[in-house]
Figure 1 (tube, rainbow, N blue to C red):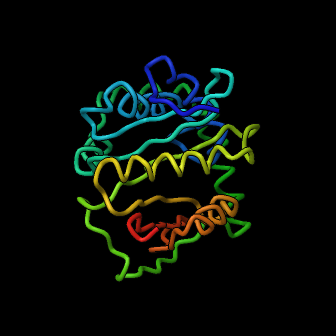
Figure 2: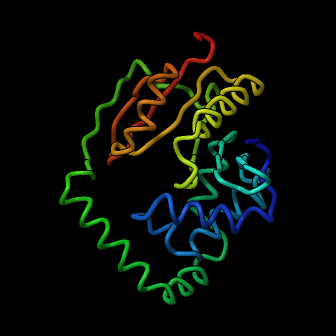
Length: 207
């Protein structure tokens, strides 16, 4: 397995992996929305304040990692994506996919997966200029459990050090027990839980 910088030709594979990994997300199940995200993360990464990396096995893309190096620029890009009107018109063609997402979300709510509690730890608040954040990390389902997620985390921490940042920040879904165990095993601490997501932080200098 190798980790390398993503290139434009990786976009189709990244979109496919995101669709498999996040079945209850409108962004990843509707190709026009997914394409806008990956255009920002890969094609326009430098201007958007992000870095996108891929994990490959035998030169096949099996995972993706998006690191945010400039949160102000990245946040602005996500709030004001290019061509929003055209994008949403194209989404109409994917109405069956949207219906499937709604059904999956309803099923998740019934099983108690989607929570809305928020438990902030003010002692763990980290200034933007001192942290590197993971916006997205994913591994193709048939390659999960093979150490790729851990390799991504080590790579992210290496980038954090090389950029002169002290803290590594990442988010994962509450129900993603495997990733939460991995983060704890790598000395990450929960900063807060919000809307079904857990925010973890690691002090790189302390390890």
